[in-house]
Image 1 (tube, helix red, strand yellow):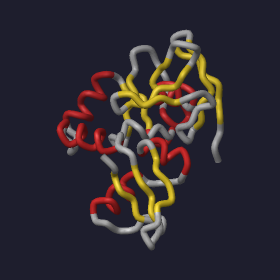
Image 2: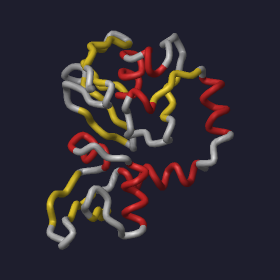
Image 3: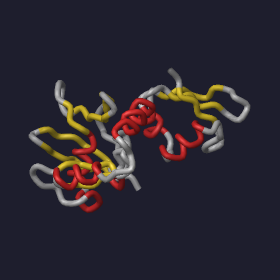
Length: 163
């Protein structure tokens, strides 16, 4: 069940949910999601969610970093986030099977527009990026990427990355 909490970090406040949503506008910049906190300031959504949900992500502490378990910086569901020390985070990425090049390729791919078609190839919707799609439908990004790469249906629809 989606749960919203108000959280404050570095003097900035936002209302965020364990499903990776926020009550204010979410911006995507350079493959990261940011939440608008006031008229001119934004902060990474993952940091606000991890701080708001320590029972899921781990206890917050000064100097901590937030790691995305699935290596998708746009998947900000609390269950996908974990609070780590800087050293733990570096070590985790050093030993990760996902290389930096692959990570950057995935990030670029996730920022492209996505078209949704029914089984007869009628256009149903166009989403700005995976994050936009994820806020409107309960999707698994891994399953979606697999379906797109093999021209298979996912959730009964076809999904195409647009340039």
